[in-house]
Length: 73
Image 1: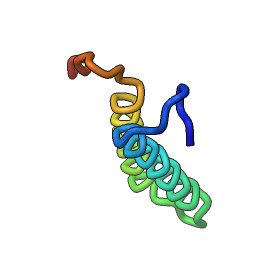
Image 2 (image 1 turned 60 degrees about the vertical axis):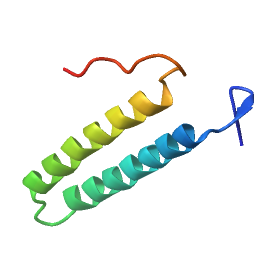
Image 3 (image 1 turned 180 degrees about the vertical axis):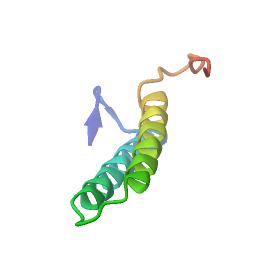
């Protein structure tokens, strides 16, 4: 698989796995919302985790080599 004309490095591979994990989590959130009696606290917790996972993905995938990561808020 090629990304930007280069083979994916380890960091990009791990970032892609984070994205896949976020997708699985969103599927769990959808399943919970489709339940007869959905538990909104579970959905909210899943979405909070998805946001954190997507932030990790962005930090890993879009970070240019040799640049420091953005400061944490």
